[in-house]
Length: 310
Ligand code: ADP
View 1 (cartoon, rainbow, N blue to C red):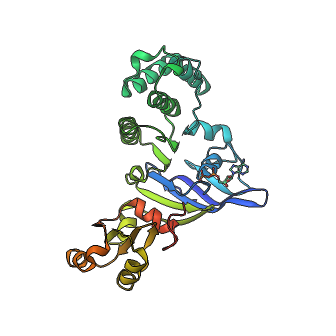
View 2: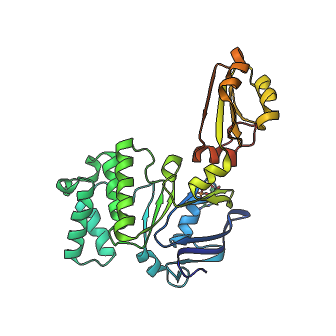
View 3: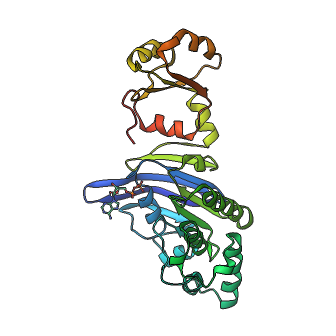
């Protein structure tokens, strides 16, 4: 175990019956880091979070949160971590205040400290005057904000966010990310994120891609996108076979989805305008751009020519 780590795992493994859903995971996540675990549905992301937060026991391997071995004192671990899941932990028939006071009591916060913290957190999301409102009268974005407030009520050292913005509109997603950034800046919180919105993971210090329970590829989003390619070239064409065989000798095999081809280009001196002219009417649209994390994801989880297998 690395002693500076907020989260460490060695050989962390989970099996359900004969199926290994998390396979021999070795992680070292530094204190204060914004970490993203990314991968297709069923890759083992939530199971990893469940093991790290003592909600489910590992089949084998070990894990530490803030230097504490999780199997040694699960109750202490639950006080050290905060959790926000897609499925709300809140009671919709209760008010915001009742939900948060109930959670505060579980964390042994004094009434004074609880009230102060609840006020602070609700103010961040502009919910302070809705404190007595029942959750079922709030919008989805407001309810998620209360979920996040509940997750950080006790100032956890490590915050786990499992798809925290799924189903929310852009303003609500932005409000949540501003708050997470504030928690990291002001409280030094380590954040462990899973998300399907990869543009949100671009803000992470480090991301790992996981598939079938195994880590595939990891690094800073900037390094990963730079390593992938200099440019992504996207072409729409009624003749994908023809364009593919014409350009593959130059750029390698593309990823194909119906009539859309995506090439990754390592060179930085391609004359795209000349290329566009040489392809002429064989293409209906063509664009080139810098790669992003979505491209890293696609090229990690799709085989060229097979299309999108996510
Ligand atoms: P992700 O969060 O990446 O979508 P999960 O960790 O939820 O993936 O699931 C990983 C795999 O483990 C999936 O194949 C899922 O069906 C399986 N799984 C999760 N929980 C259980 C369970 N309680 N019993 C059996 N299989 C499970």
